[in-house]
Image (cartoon, rainbow, N blue to C red; front, side, top):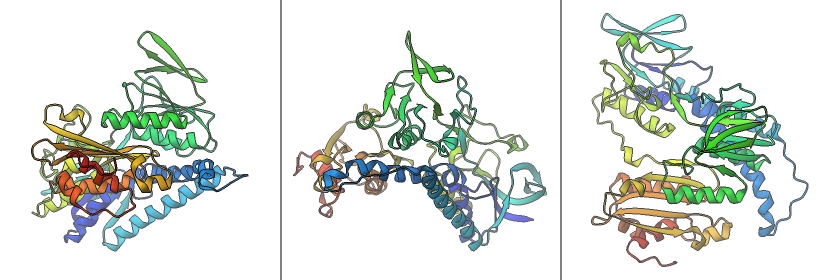
Length: 456
């Protein structure tokens, strides 16, 4: 079978690229090694983790309902039902993706794919026992958990995020190795459900890629919730009931009946056979591409976690769209400075643009507005956190926005829009924000850039 485009990988980047290509009139095949589409995100990542985060958040909130005048007693955790709900959410969404592919008349094939090289001016791809040909091939195979040499996975006690989503019992003591988004989110799930959680982080603070003031605030809030932290700690191994780490000359012993390795992810290029085109990976295992997402071999493209940039589902989606539009001669574009990042703890931490640490050589202004001074946040009894806005000192253009607080994942969209269109803090300050809403905190932070905040 011959196609205009073969997409290898049916995750957020791959299936979005396939659908956009079909919309543009291309004959498309989408190859997926799993039995279901949606990639890591829908199957074993973003969606199941958020389902458990929301369920565990409801469970944890019961303890604080008295302040709202609601007495609840006799509450019991039914983990089996909670896990079943998560599975149902996942199944509905992956079935939805398959339906979208069929609706757009995209040929669907399951089985691991590999490149076979070029023949008769067409690229050959093997999927299972079949060989397909296409004018272009788009690689969107995503990523996999990065193992820790000192603590190899056993899938039972020492696990990746995949197994940590499927625990059938709440761990008594959970050690999380890595203080990034995955570790903090899954750590939060099991903390809320009754586990003692200790996060072991190699760096001096959690979320070392985030704005320092926001990550330090998040750490303080999570500690108040009961999460423990061992920072500047290097894991060296484990005993049958503990993790062993060092901090300088100090040896740390952290009790743990379950150990989650959450030290990041690495590009998954598996059995793609990139050697068929002499495509060399960079020092971090990524596929180099040009501004049109084309590799060193004409007609072979790559997007998402297998190329440079943050490993985020929404980043892969934007790249998938841009890549196929470029193939059709359109002006496909991704503004990497306006890709938001979210950590779905409670409260959430959401950011876009530059951190204050990244602006040390740029003249800038900074202003914060705390949620404790926001009317809606006080009514919700969710006053932890703040909105922080960074602007250029002379042009007032917004350079970065960092929100730690309730529904930060939704609030950040306003900041993304401002950055995308090159807006200023004055633009935000002049916009009418509904009252009472959490979004008023963004307006107040913008006013604060020019010392005009009203409610602070």
